[in-house]
Length: 157
Image 1 (spheres, rainbow, N blue to C red):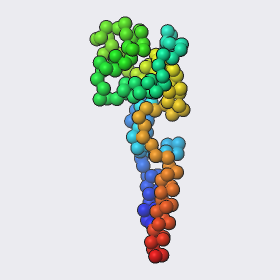
Image 2: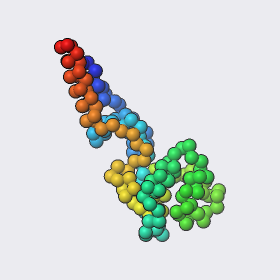
Image 3: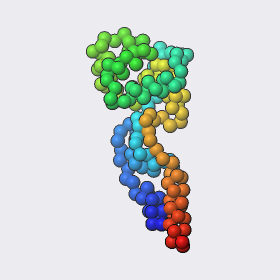
Image 4: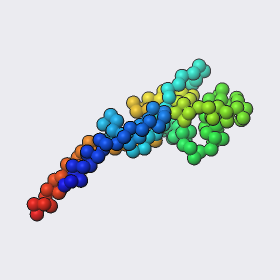
């Protein structure tokens, strides 16, 4: 029964930690407890981008996740971006590496999504984060209430 009371209260005690890219970790934020923060994708618009999307939304989202993944090599990220951005493709390989080193993962994903002919909200919806892991707060409240009732039922029996 104590767990049913402490579980929802414990979630309020999570501290706010800023980790960059407009992110909070282990924080109740807009009704969610964020377990693992992803990368906030920056909305970027450039001249000469594709007016009509060339790829499906699923393919763009999959490749955008690869672009922000730290385990993917810079050369593979450069190939993914060069496949949709003619200006980036025209750069020498050394310059491509410099561009990848300067841009944050969120900016890089924004450049890729824009070059593919989409806006970030078309691919990601209203939540502009990639690889974000959350639990809606209502699930924790329901779990806590359920534990209280189970504890009371066991106490009666």
